[in-house]
Structures are given as structure tokens and as C-alpha cells.
Image (cartoon, rainbow, N blue to C red; front, top):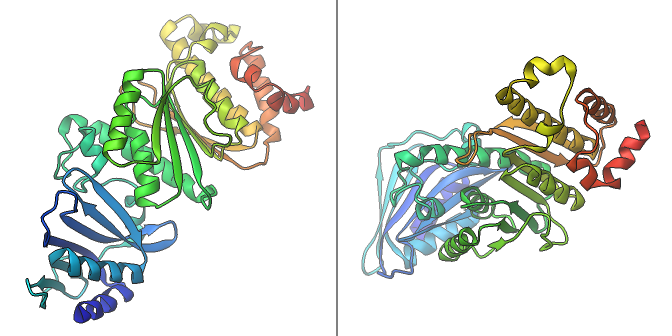
Length: 393
């Protein structure tokens, strides 16, 4: 394998690799992968080579540096594969391994264009159609060849949009130690599985993820899927948001389509944990609907459908404002409609430890304008919030 190793050193060290694929296995074994794809990616600020190992029913990703990648390709060709195709800027190289272990390298004209990693950087944070993805295959979003089913394309777009939002915050949180993540109201958990795939399979982070839901059949299903995919750092638990005590410290809280004050309960949990990141897509919101009133706004309030939309906007504005008071940098972002709700706003908060003093006056004035007094999120946070508000009273 000396000639192959020398070729790979020249290609990879000089960063000329566009794409690689190893195929035609030497060993027929259901437990082994049958193909490995290799491509350069940007992970945070580092260039890596991403290896995608394709099994019959799943795929596994590894991100390796240049020297590790060279050693891995040589090992794979020596022990597992009879053929490799390496696509570079200057040429394509076909590598053939005979039954007796003789190596042949054929050089051909280049057939692929160079990858612009500055453009590709964000694309590595999402799942491209055509890339076989084990959890998407298992959940019926794509087929075994990586083709997304037409009826599931909206779900595929939603998953990618969610991962883009997660990718944006990873550089802003501490990832050196194990990250504990809780997804409240996980449902069928497309996005929970996507989060696991992105953080562990693609970024290679040390992560524990727990999905929580009130439907036992959903929890049983998700645990079976996680077990089938060997997602051993992911588990699902039957339970309520307010009662969950599984971790002493949680770094990221995700809550998707949690109804009414369940979203507030999740935010309160996150704040009490001093979570580094909060990602919340609220669902139906009834509490504020019953409470808001301002005589000037009667032309809007008198129409139920308008008041419902108005109360949703007011509720999410209050949630974002509260997080700002408590030291979170907060954004309200457009998401993609969920299957269960037409709501499409995601609240994203990143812990900064710098409480926003201006947000206190804004919050008090806003509540006064709408005639709001005691509301769930404020009462649930107790002194943690009230000590800030008292400074302005």
C-alpha cells in the first residue's frame, strides 16, 4: 500500500481532494459497511475530511484530520475494499486491489469541479438530498438511495432549517465538555434525531440527548428507532415538562409545538438550569388571549381570529423580553410550519450573563399597555425575574 499512501499524502496534504468513494467489498458480511464516501467539510473553523460509512440499514459519519484520513483510507483499501475512486482538481484516480493484494493506480482526466468550501460551509450543517441518512431512512423521509419522498419534502426542509438554526449557535456555546440536551414535547422526534445526527455524527461532539413526551406509544417508538440506529446517547422518557429532574445541569433546551403555558414551563426550566441555549417553537397560546385588553385596540380585539393571532405575537414578545432581562441574547426567527400547528416562529436565546436593563422598562410598559398583571412565566420564575423588575418599580 506504499504507492497508495504516497498518492494520498500528495492529494490530501495539498488539499486537492474533491471527493472519494471506496467500494466493492472483499468481505461479504451484513454487519460491515458496503461503501465509504469521503468529502472535505468545514467544521467550525477547521477543515476536515468527512467519512460516510454506508451499511445496509444505516450510515455512520466520522470527521478526520488529514493524517488520520490517509491512515483510514489505506486501512480500508487494505482490509475491506477492492476499489477506490479519488477525484481531485487535476485528475481522477482509480485504485484497484487484486485478490493477491496487488495495487494498481490508474490516472484519468478530471471529471469534477473544485469545491468552494466558503460556500460549502453552511451546506455541511444540513443534510443534502442524495446523502443517505440513517434516521431519515428509518423514519420514512428518504429511501435507501437517499431520495427524499415527495410527500416528505416539507419535513425534509423543516429538518434542514432547524439544523441551520442550531449550527448558527454552536460557535457561541461551550462545547468542550459533555453537553446535556433536553427536548420537551418531542413527539415523533424527527428534529430530535436530526439534532443527534448533526451534533454527534457530523460535529463529533460529546452529547447526551433526552426526548420527553406525554404519549407513551410515541416514546416506545422513538426508543426502538434509537436502538435500531445505535444512537446510544439518545433516550426518550414518558413525562411532563414541569416534573422532569433527569439532569442537574442542562446546556440546551428544545421545545417544539408545546401547547399554551407548556412552552413557558420549558423556558422556566431552561432558565433555572442556566442553559446555554434555548430553542422554542410555541404552539397554541390561550393564557394571554383571555387577559389582553386595551380600549384603543378594540377594532382588533373584537375579531376572534385577529385577537388569537395578536395574542400569539404578544405572548412570544413577552417570552423574548423576559429572556433578555435574564441575560439571554434573544431572536425571533421564521421557522417552517409544523405538522401539528401553523405557528412558524422560533424563539432562540443564547446565554450571555449580561442582563438587558433596558428590557426591564420595556417589559413593564408593555404589560401595562395590554392590561396584564400576573402571568404564568413571571410567576413561575419567581424571585429570579422579580429581583430585576423591582429595580424599576
